Length: 328
Ligand SMILES: NC(=O)CC[C@H](N)C(=O)O
Image 1 (cartoon, protein in one colour):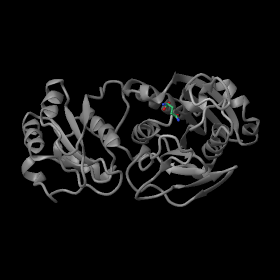
Image 2: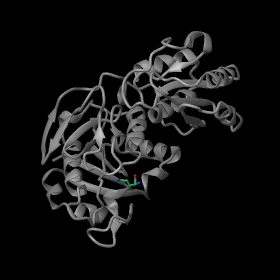
Image 3: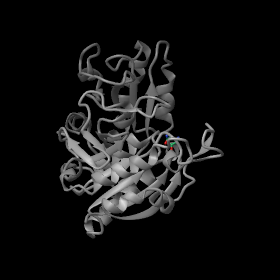
């Protein structure tokens, strides 16, 4: 039987409300032992062990916890202490944690994130079945070499592609562009594809303690966006700026000028889009070569920030950063 270790970090899957219909609740209130006990069927899938890694709402996730999580998972796999790992996580930033792990876990063994949209105390709580499905994937030998995944609401997503699309719907996660990696429902798993971009064993990045993730800000673009936000970011110490641009990664003219100034001072500027899907291409409405900008290709602003932080932590120059956005 496969050995699956669950690292619990909090979120709604561990949330508790006053009654089974109350909309207010506190995420991260149910401990891992209780989560495991609430799904007796897990024992038929794998030898399951659990560990309370953190106990937070995922809006409080940060670089330090990401690094700790990656190091803990790498340690478990290097010591052959688990065949697969499940991370229970709040859904708000699960896509960010997933992408960080996708780039810094060094094993081909499966790492599967899961969470829920309704707290553990809710009528029709979705957490228990999500946990069951996530453990089934983590226990599956065929899940190897597919990078970090998110198993939720019977769907299986690649951490690179997944994003939260609704604040409250149970069916909130989508993978625009490449689509689902597969499905996982009541122990029946189907895979549709493998991620083709570099990850885990093929990644050139590490969560190594010496590599501090520098400050990278995401600036949201809109009609009438103020150019001085860019200067504020730079003066506050940002080494990178990701633009959540309009359309194909665009910003108003005055912002283009202040971003070009930022580039001259050594800041790396990445143009992503707030649209939610599609490419951001070089040289469509702006001369990126002359301005010194990098484009995000298909990565969302929040994931572009993580990739840029890792690039900066590994001291990549601007050209290598652009290559990274095409490779990862
Ligand atoms: N559905 C959720 O998990 C959201 C709850 C909380 N904001 C979190 O991300 O942890």
